[in-house]
Structure formats: C-alpha cells, structure tokens
Length: 234
Image 1 (cartoon, rainbow, N blue to C red):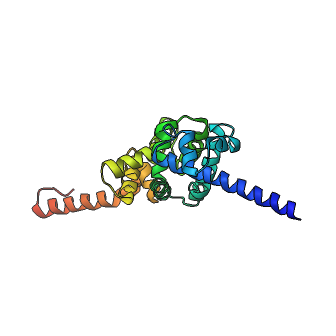
Image 2: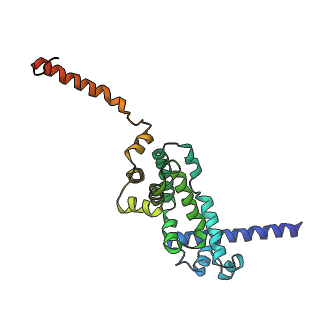
Image 3: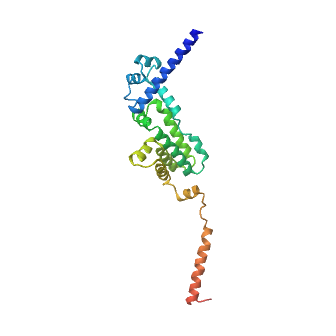
C-alpha cells in the first residue's frame, strides 16, 4: 500500500515538474521568442536543472509540441465552420473577421514572436492550415469564378492574418471593429454592380420597368407640344 502511494506521488511530482517546464517555455516564448529562448532559460524559469528538462523532453521539438498543445488548449482558434450558417457573404465576412481579430488580440504576444521566429517551422503547419480553411469558408459564400475567385481568395486570406490585424490596429490606430469594417470593404470593393445587387437581395432591373417612365415622358412632351400649337394634328 505504501509503495503504491509512493509511486503515485512520484508520478504526480513528475507531472507537476513537466507542467512547470512547459509553462516556463510558454512564458519565455511570449516574451523573448522561441529563437532567443534557451534550455537554460527554461530550466531557470521552471526552477529545475537542464538535465531535468532533457529528462522530460528529448529535444526542442518535443518541448515545442508540448507548448503548442497547452497554448492551443487555452486559446482555441475560432470555430470557422460555424460561419457557414451565415449566408450573406459580407455578414459572414464580418463575423469571421471579428472572431479572427479577437483571437489575434488575445494571442498577440505569442503570435508576434512565433511568426517572427518560426513562421515556416513544422509546428506551425496546423496553424497555417487552419487559416487556409477559414479563408475557404468565407470564400464559399461568394458566387464568383475564375480570376475573380482567385483574387477574392487572396484578399480574404490577407484580411484574416495576424499581420493585417496588427498593421491596422497597432500601426494605424484602428479599433478592432473599425479594422473589421475596413477589411470587409476592401475585400468587397472589386465586386461588380450585378454581384452587389445579388448580394443585397435586389433584382436586376428589367427593360419593361423603364417603359412606364419613358411613356410618361413621351406623353408629357406631346402634351406640351400640343398646348404650344407647335405640332400639327393629323
């Protein structure tokens, strides 16, 4: 019974040590960045020796995976599939950008360092894949094809990025909501009049709709001519 208790307690202590190491690495990645963070820094912040860090994590990749897992658990990416319920493309765009910009704000410290130090690191593959999927979810609400679709996808993808949010908010002083509205307008600015009317739920004007106005103007002109005696009646 005593041995079982001791084994359980030892396992709990090991898990606590591992947790402290991961927490220390996350804190350092958000302040110094992954590139500037050393194993010695992590060990010192966690209150353990370097050997203990290596005992729990065979290499930096293993430590990075543990950090990513815990950070993403605490800071989940927006539910991009939930945007599909919004049919209007501009409203869906706004909803997606609001969620994306709220996420960027909440994770600004980590994102700024991670993207600067390891944008192309293999650990970032799921992150990039998520934003590609989010782009396609927003794009699917638009009825466009060919070149316009390719350009629109690029515009949507650009608007969703952390870099775009930081530029609009930090460099140019916009609020998140102002950034959302500006990005939405920029994405939609290349829309044709027919597409804009379709998006708004309007119908294209029919030629017959202009006939009453034309007829009324013609009759008005004839009445004026008759009253002035400038038209000879047949």
